[in-house]
Image 1 (cartoon, rainbow, N blue to C red):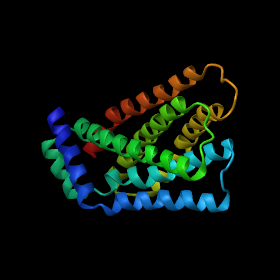
Image 2: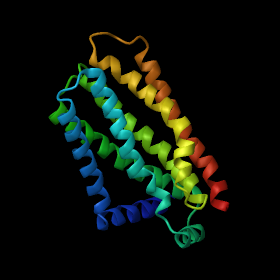
Image 3: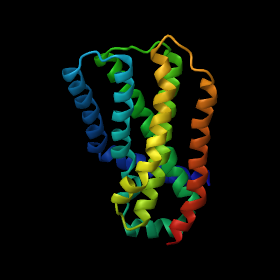
Length: 217
């Protein structure tokens, strides 16, 4: 199974390398967004900095991850069906999107720090949240992309299904990072972080359980 997962993962990496415009487009979007924020509000305060960071990362994840299954043709899905198990396909997509979003999250963090200042008072926890937030968004939009891709490639489903799911996730991420900008401690911070981890694990389980049924359709 690991070999077959690596085969799909390697295929996606090679396609991304050959079609560099998608990665360059994400980088351009990040740089231009941060520069626009800097022109409109130079050195924003901690609360604004935190909110803008997660909003930008949300839009990046939509552009980076949502195309995961939508870019696959029907013929390629049929080919996958003959040589791979559905669990292998969804796990390969999850791993690829997690790696991609971790890179985009770190790049966003670097750009925000260099251009908009660095009001974070607890860098270690915030860096942990940067990586965790990227992983969470990658898992969520991978599952939504799978549903949309198997439903005839209707990208509108991502917006319809994603809104009630992504809002609680963004609120949790924002609530976990907001105290890191202030000289106060959030009681039970690790407990709330555990809730985020539990949500991520639930998304993995749902993806593995539900994708085979979508695959058969």
